[in-house]
Image (cartoon, rainbow, N blue to C red; front, side, top):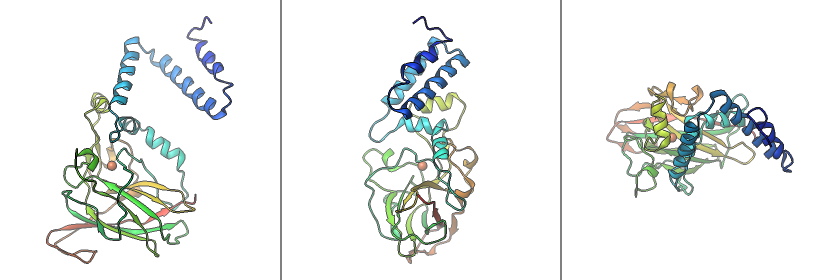
Length: 285
Ligand SMILES: [Fe+2]
């Protein structure tokens, strides 16, 4: 009792020191210390405290089974990339990871090599292929590759189009040589959703909401660490100012333009298209 601004933090820490879960004590203890430290540093006003409560409430209320405003908040504050960084210190030669993002959906179709995942999405046809190996260069057969991306024109994910079909997402399995290949549309840069409290905050902070064009991948193989990453389109004007801080040089690749003609899947295209190759290297588990 009689706690004041000098003694309150220690009192809260002491109250949960014996909870029986050492990790919970560590995590919550650090959270309380940093949160109290933050309030002391800025001398938070009561109006600001209430604004924060209202902001977090609105963030939760914006979430549903397709919209995850809290992941967006985490992404735009650099928290997601920091969590990724401290959890994935990969060995030299392994492909770097980046944010998971809010648009992954369970239950995407399992498709064969060179399947077209674009559905009704507009955009330049794009053929992506490559390999999955371990850090010793051994091809990994039977690795699963989940891919998901925006369309190639409006920059929308399928889940952002009410009533629209599931598209621009699929799961592939590497063949005996560790190869994967599929057809899609070349993704374009897009704004993260700005119609919620996180978007309002970005604009108040003088930040733009754009992410450079990318294809999401999640690659899993027994004995290897699951890799969650993106392949970014070289030349995109938002590479150096990604709203979620997700870009790494090693993930930026050339999408090569081609005139109408024979495509890598053996089909003949009447319009220009692009190709991209990326070889993923998985770190040991
Ligand atoms: Fe994305």
